[in-house]
Length: 322
Length: 155
Image 1 (cartoon, rainbow over the protein chains, first blue to last red):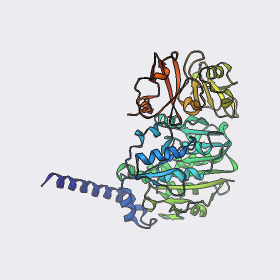
Image 2: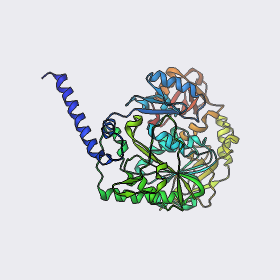
Image 3: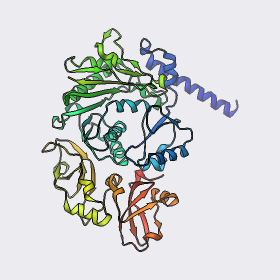
């Protein structure tokens, strides 16, 4: 057999294995997704990259031109100012504009949920699970570097990535704290808004790992869920009545999404309808999964399946503290 | 548990640091005072600039707060890279604008001889590239050395 043919057969076999792994990991969502085959196929495709221009720099047009010179295939992201979709594996980290902090790369599906928080200059905002800081810098930029943003991270190992992004983009309004988000010091509050981008089983980020979706055991899922509930309750308790809390994960598992929202008392918070940009295809939260029924207002949350927008998978809900 | 040296305390605008920034690089202090607060870690000589926090003492577990201006008390030390990223564009003295090949060499960390710094005294300079402060350089005997952190250099 000739070399190239043998090589292409090897690639084909690897692709088949990746598909099989993704199918095994995602099969449990058969009843809640419109097209499991399309989801599985999307989950093994390389993830396109997305970049946006740091709004804290002047002359954004100058960096837009530089970006298009580096990557003429860049497609503007609809509904977002100065943001583009780039082919997978574009080496953004080697561009001078990235090193200068004029550009930031962030998974496309996670850009608008960070924007949903609606942070304003001068407010007090909490980002409870901050590293590596992609949403943190997006929020700080929306706050025009003014007010107070508390970015908490439990893992010391992940702090350097968070600090790198904050320094590179010239963010000054942020305090980085280290510790368990469930026990963050209440003296930081009360906040106007909080983001809980909770640790999860990460099924929606499989595209970054060639479709590798790790199967999660029931025990692991239940301890993950307890942590997520603890984080969301802490964020709600530190938010002013009337303030908003955005809860997000990068998993499809209803136990870690709608299930977590359902463990919040109805009198503590309400899940609000989302203002979903018209170009984003999102489906409502599910009311029932594997025999468990969730609170009625979870339908206001949004599920982003990988095959709908050719992005990673994501779940987001916005709650109002009552 | 925090060590004493990790405890941040708010301080009044530090006149020595503000004068040093203004005299050496022309960074106007009113731009720093507006909306930001200065901090110092207990038992250390560093100065930080960050958001206002209405709690005294500051809540626990702070790792970093805003960005460090300088690690030492002036006239020693140098302006920190993170500080220059945000405020370096305000510099009016000892400021270099680089573009093209010269900018690429600086970002790659290469020392270069520049005509315009031939008669500059030895010391730190603010380097601007494409309208953004790339960070700190050191001028020495007509040469510009790059002092940008290694993880922000072109590889």
